[in-house]
Length: 288
Ligand SMILES: [Fe+2]
Ligand SMILES: [Fe+2]
Image (cartoon, rainbow, N blue to C red; front, side):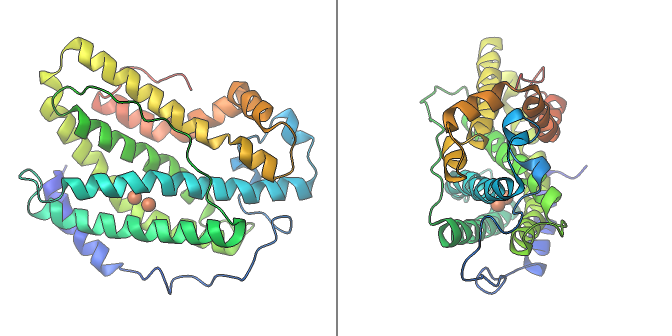
């Protein structure tokens, strides 16, 4: 298994080879009709399989799929914003000088382009980006924990986002622009994830022994809560309201408790949770 420092030059080379221009990569139709087609396949929609879903007709479901894709793109965009800031802060440190800083420049460049692409879609077709609801509470960190936590957050937004990318990128039954955005995103994310998996494991193993059991427990409970708070953003009352459904907050509450939705959250989270378990960042799968 290559270390992150060994992986970085290869990933940088691949980034150069696959370099793309965000301004010429897409044809943006003037407008999109939310009720006219699918923007996300039904089985990815947050309330799929629930009684509320079963009570909707096809037009309503398509309209919901439009606002759900805007919500997903908003979620990823708001995850990428602090990611870029955090990656930038980690360039040119003693520990990252050389190939890792070189690769971070590509990582940052690509995330910046993703934000432009997601922002363009959301603003152009929905007239907005859904604001993020997560609260950032101040914490005290054990040695190295701030870095470890940062890369855990990166992994979560990238792994959850990439699940949707892979599901949608080759689907011909959804809007082709949406499929293409997912494809373009996935190609870059595959490199980010390869780097992140290795780099986070190395960071964790570097600091883990210096953490007390209490510090480790506090970290693990933060990590489980953070994953859950991300899922909270997927059940957005404003999305349900924009799709014309009544009682957005009630729908969110219903979906968070519904066993079908919980099973879906577990399925989407499986890759990142398995990784956390494998590396030892978690000892047990969190209740979602
Ligand atoms: Fe991204
Ligand atoms: Fe990424």
